[in-house]
Amino acid sequence: MVRMHARVVNARGRPIPVRRVMLHHIVYKNAGRFRGDRLDGTCGGKSESFYGTGEENATLRFPPGYGYRIRRRDRWLTGWMLMNHRNRRDRAYIEYTAVVDTSRHLRPVKPYWVRATDCVSARDPIFNVPGGGAPGSRYVKSADWRVPVSGRLVAANSHVHGGAATMRVTQPGCGGRVLLESRPRWGLPSHPYYKVLPVLHEPGPIGTDWVETAQGIPVTRGERLRVSAAYDNELLHTRVMGIMHVYLSPGPAPGSPCGALPNDVRAYHPKGPGTDVAPKVTVPLTGLDPSGKAQTILRPPGPTVRFTGPRAATVVARDRSFSLRNLSIPLGGRVRWRSLDRGYHDVTVASGPLGFASYWLRQGERFGHRFGKPGTYRLFCSLHPIDMAQTVEVRPGS
Image 1 (cartoon, helix red, strand yellow):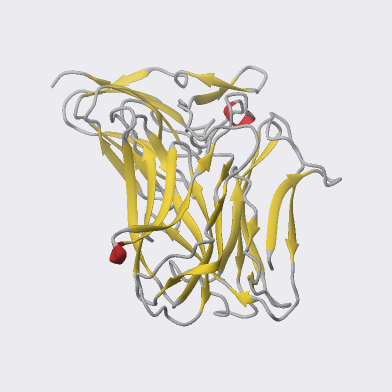
Image 2 (spheres, one colour; image 1 turned 60 degrees about the vertical axis):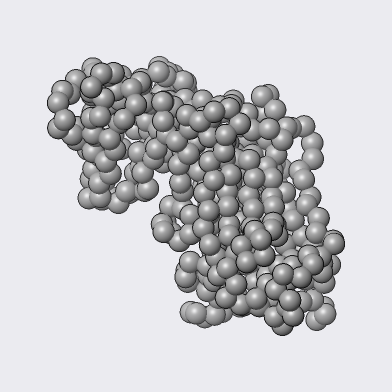
């Protein structure tokens, strides 16, 4: 396979606008012909992720002479999320188009999805940018990746969220030089990403650079590369990601590990209306008006429960609802959340003085946070943004 793209369409195969239904993300995995045939080479999964897209509308493509090898009996899996932005049932289809070259001269590539968060949380590979820095400041999250086989890096693409500045793969053993860099492209203020409700997190880019080189960047088995995601740190950005989709063509080890880089490395930057500067966005809380239409709210309904002293406030997530919707706590106070539902929940700051978020919480799991900066924190479960909203007022003073 040399090219692939996915999109949302109706029953007639016509694209559906984002204002109606949006493809938040989709990941295509290859489980191979039998158990153990195709394995994730990055975090040890039982299938191989080879293509993903979503808000960034990415297209899988390789330079001439390379392709992702597929077999007739391969089993493909997908993990996806569609968002219905209207208050009535809808029907949509995820359509994918693949270009397959059956000639035998192509050199195979293997995908590695390397993360700035390493493999600490395979079920929820996120991190949080607290914000509060000076204008122009950066928050950088990095992790090292050991190259599993020798060969050449021939293509790469990034997956980042709102507030991202760039995604890089660098070579610490060669002075930290940049091997691959993918930059985001953002929509204009009129773009539907900034008009729809509800939102799961700050709207992401409308595209990211696709980087490719036919000559390939030589790497050696066991070599340490560094994967880094840089974000704006003036504002908070919660539940963000930093994933680089790297495609490696196995081959002989290079003679000189720090030799000259190929001169044909090219980054295809997304075209069309947009900007290269991340917009400043405040994520709203969402509720329903009397007609059932999503609308922005300042706080969920209900009284404010006031807590005093150092004892932690406990909030239970049950039946897609927080047991306490509005809290007031002293500065330095602690809140603990506990999930009792079978499905996943999380605790995410939509807006406030500083950003934080939990991983996805299973039934019985807990998450706690001590609030060290006064102000009003608006929180929600990013998986159930309308049903599970909350405010925490942190009173100033000792």
